[in-house]
Image (cartoon, rainbow, N blue to C red):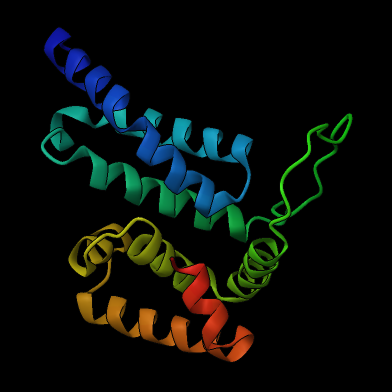
Length: 168
């Protein structure tokens, strides 16, 4: 890799890693899996850096989305993870927030991977429909209809009030 390209890639990773790891975490719901997903996406990105360096973030997001969909389809996805000991720290009583997150999380897991990804990219990442369409490799109209269908399904599953609290 040319030294200038290597420097550009290093700067990109340093400046955008926080945002990208958050996206990876939302897609995987596991910190270690999120780190693996981001590392895989960055490894694929560096190979194509000369071609995509004008808009690398969109490329990385697209790679992460496709990688995660592939993992969801894998028969090994969803296996339990063994931990040596439970975490040892207390927290303030945030029962209603936790209940809302759990309810919304369960409802999101019921949605098909594509609809879940649309919601994550649109509402969590706050991306415009056109960028979501580019990442997912579909039309803006498909993004709109997938978003509408996903939100309608979530409303049926958990109710209007929980949806509004969870999206804030």
